Image (cartoon, rainbow, N blue to C red; front, side):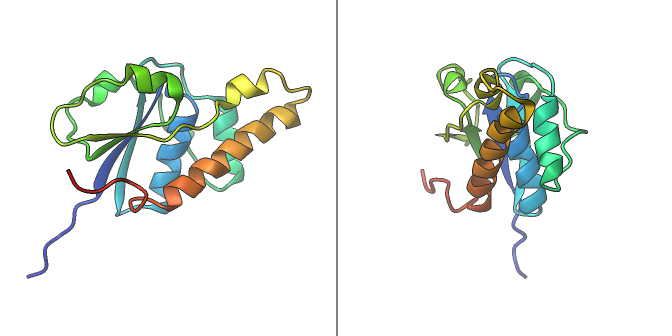
Length: 149
């Protein structure tokens, strides 16, 4: 009898779980259903960023029903990987029991970049660029993740 392969459980972790980690969860759900069981969380909760929701919708991915979660809410899940998507959280990444491997894949912070934008369109372009970079990363999963002990 063939063995059933369970989806890989991946947590995308960011500081506030408002933008980058939310986009990564949305892309993984959209592109890797059945291969990856995605989650996102933060070491703080800042709410779902409306511009992240907007640019993901432009790309055909609805993340509006996702919510900003604190990492402690997910401590009971036995993750295969914890992917930190911003520099700040890498330093504050909690220790997960079990087999979870931590991987750091930093992406620029769209809200920080958007603060200096002259127009709303320029601000959204920062979100779009990071959205597309995150998509390119997620498309390569799980191959892009380190294997073995």
